[in-house]
Image 1 (cartoon, rainbow, N blue to C red):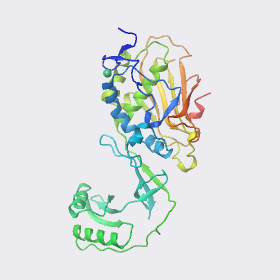
Image 2: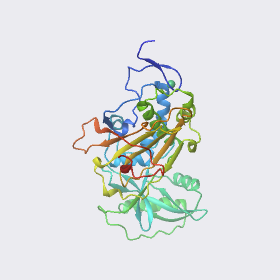
Image 3: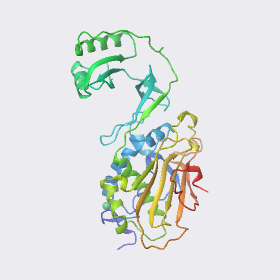
Image 4: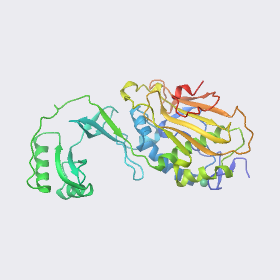
Length: 363
Ligand SMILES: [Zn+2]
C-alpha cells in the first residue's frame, strides 16, 4: 500500500489521505481558522452521510443564528442566497419573532442580522384554545388558508395582523370573509411605518442530527490530537461511529448544558469576542470531549460533553488532557478565507461540575 493510502474509519473503504481537504473539525460554514488540522480518514461517502447532520447544525441551531448574526460567510454559504435561512432535511430554520401587542409575531430577517421585517399573519385559536399564528401572503387562495387552518386544528380566527396599505387590507379582508363568512374585522391602531427597536425571541428546532454533528466534531477533534495511536476504527469507538452516521439514543453519548442566562445578544456582536472551545480528557477510564461552539460569556448556545468510548485498562496519565480555543478575529483583521486562529490551551482536568463558563476552563 502506498504511504498515503489508509482506510476510512467508518466503512474500511480505502482512501488516499494525501488528496482532498479532509473533514473540517469545525464546519467550514463557521469559517476557517489558521492552524486548523483536518481529519482525513473518512471516505467521501461517509463524509456525505455525516454532512446531512452538519447541515442541521449550520442551518437550524442556535449556532446557525450566531453564525449569521456575526456575519460569518464561507465559500459554501455564499453559494446560496445568504439572506434566506433555510432548514435542513425537514427541520425548519430558526424562527424569529418580535414582541408585539403582548404576543410574539413572526418576522423575517433581512440583510443585516438585526434588521427584521414583519410578516402578515393570522392569530387563530386551536381546539384547546392555544394561539396559533398562520402566515398570510397577498396571493393566498382561500383553499390554501383553509388547508393551513385545518392542519393547525383551528376552531376560530381570533385576529389578524397585517401591514401595508389599504390594498393589503382589502385583499386580506376578502380572503378572510371567504374562509370564515361573517367574520368581523376592525382596524386597530397600528405601528407607524418605519424603523422600530423591539424585543424579540428566536426559536430553534434541533433533532438528533444536531447531536450527531456535535459527536462528529468531538470525535474527529479527539483523533487529530490524541497521542495514544488511536485512529478511530478501534472497537472501543464502535458505538460512537454508529451514532455519528446513523443516529440513535443521544443520551448515551452526550450530556448538554443550557447556558445559565438567556443572553441579550445586542451586548456583544464584536466577532473577536467569540470563539469555539474544545477540550479532551482521556486521563480517566473514559474518553470525553467537552465543546461549546460560539462560546462567549453571554452565549445562547449549548455546552456539550461527549463520551467517545471506554479506555478500560489503558495507562492513566494526567497529561492526557488538552484544550483548544478557536478564536475569531475582528472583521477587519480577518482575511477572505481565514477568520481566526487556533490556540492550544493547557488544562489540567475537565471541570467535574460540567458547566463552567468557558473562559475559566482554560488556565
Ligand atoms: Zn467510509
